[in-house]
Image 1 (cartoon, helix red, strand yellow):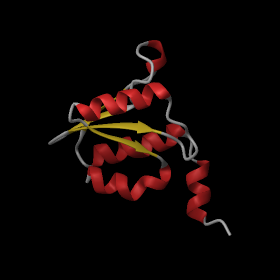
Image 2: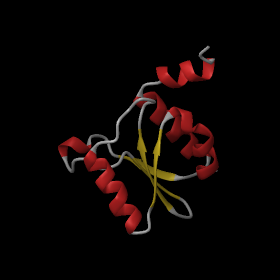
Image 3: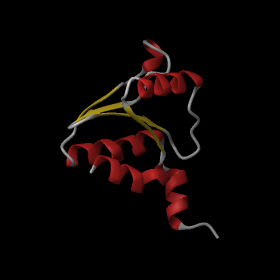
Image 4: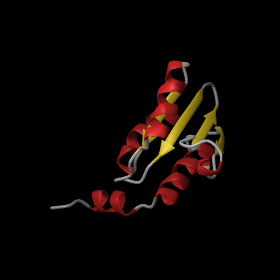
Length: 101
């Protein structure tokens, strides 16, 4: 039997999920920026950049979304440089709350 939570997680679009995260960033008083369309600039550039006491970069994916090769390359390069990076899907909400609180 599928839970109501699982149905909700699968039904959220990437835009809705991203808005949930940015609303939480605002609530927790982060300064953040959303890269509107990396396809026009640098392929794979990650979605959300948040700064408070540290820099956090987030790639937002719908529940079944796939991280592209270019996005993985950005994630790995930034992590090697010491930046905190995350890929978040709707099922990751508890982790989102913990990391951004």
